[in-house]
Length: 255
Image 1: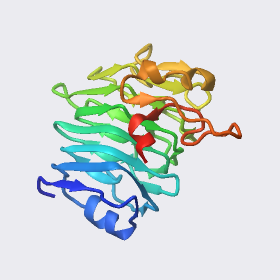
Image 2: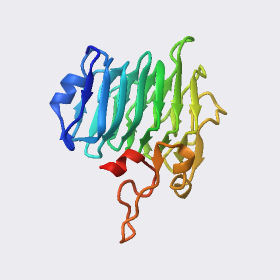
Image 3: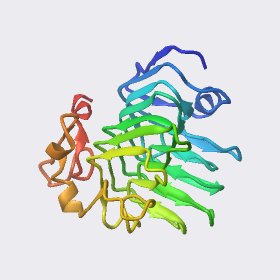
Image 4: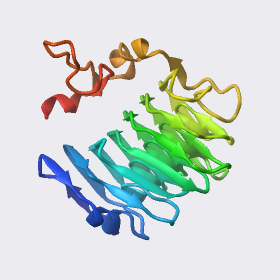
């Protein structure tokens, strides 16, 4: 797909096969996808090919977007909620995923992005369930795998994961599954202690650039996560309006 700017105009957009054809095709996205603070719901992708997500590979900018809970993305390796892969200079900013991300075989799954060559994931969070049906898996709450080559470099900043990581048997990270070449600059990231991971970054061992927190602690992290976030809003009956009490992106208040 050539470089262009796409802007969501409707309050709530439901795509199915349209998204699969346009955004999950064989080419990379190299433009600007402006989510315009809206929600995409009802995605259903179940393909045998690898590298799948709302976008197959992103070399542009995806921003201000929600993937809602009535969404399901499944593929054979490199499966991410927003993008299967981030290529050179690709960015995902102020997005969150609530849908199910399911890897039927192969390796590498992430709640936001599966694999990162170079680029950045900033001010994003995942509450969706991540499932692996592979015995050789690498998956993380935000990013599955970072740094393919010695030249690779990327950033994961101001992100958190409270989504469940299910049935994984290999490299599980609350935030990043595998950064074995230490090419990802991970800063100010957090993960829920009950999400199913035992470490924040699956590899290299001992990497502490993702911090484990309890649910109560994460719910108080809005100011720590940075200017893009604010606290959830509590209704009069004690329930939460947006995100079960966890920090939300400030633009969510505008909807």
